[in-house]
Image 1: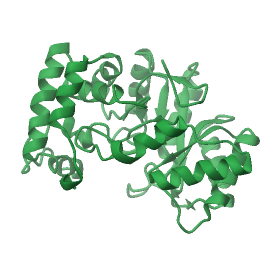
Image 2 (image 1 turned 180 degrees about the horizontal axis):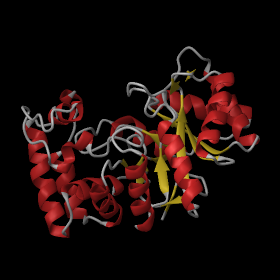
Image 3 (image 1 turned 135 degrees about the horizontal axis):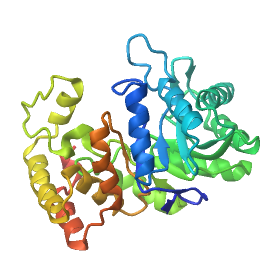
Image 4 (image 1 turned 45 degrees about the horizontal axis):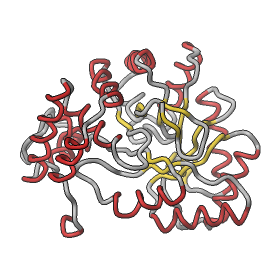
Length: 316
């Protein structure tokens, strides 16, 4: 287990992404995935109130409802659930009233008394940050939320959030959720330093670069199953991206694990990273995620992956 920032939340070093629940994984498949993850030692689930509002006929909150139904049915012990606010169609933005209403709606869907970790999903430039920080602090004071966190915030805005929280005397964030993986390392230049500065646990999303780091798409012409995900993953099939896959495959083979597992293990080895987020649409994908949380790379293996994936501003 590993601790999230300065909180007392001890979690499995991998978060199961709930973005697929109610989308590419129906209720039954989601229950199977959650069962397997929990049976393998997993206790950290990440979702958002907006999942999966982008699907025709859905309104958002579907993932939370499935997770809530699983919690009610299985009654597992020691589960940490993280969810987010600002993108649900009915609860857009981070005004105080909206944050409160969205949190109450998430609590109802999840069927819990308190949200373990509550993220501001995206920054809201139209709402004064003082108002948002105070609203999150009030949720903690009132017991609706245990700990607060931020996602997709710039380093400057994270520093400002912490400054305001300290001035107001309210709960400070304990975690940050950025885009971070072997083919997207810009995070190391801004978010990782600020996380270290304030003791924030880093919980990266897109840990497998939309499937690219699993080795499924090895050509810029890759279409896979014709899905948007395949096209998104194929964008990483650059000369450097393909070299990363070659090294990743060698590292995975050395440990008897998949490339996906090795990519997750590399993230876990990075400073301040608590638990990468990865999702599974099928039960068969869960073992690779669990292996990513339990495989420890050697210093030489981390260095080899660092070298082949080295990022500079000119790469943008």
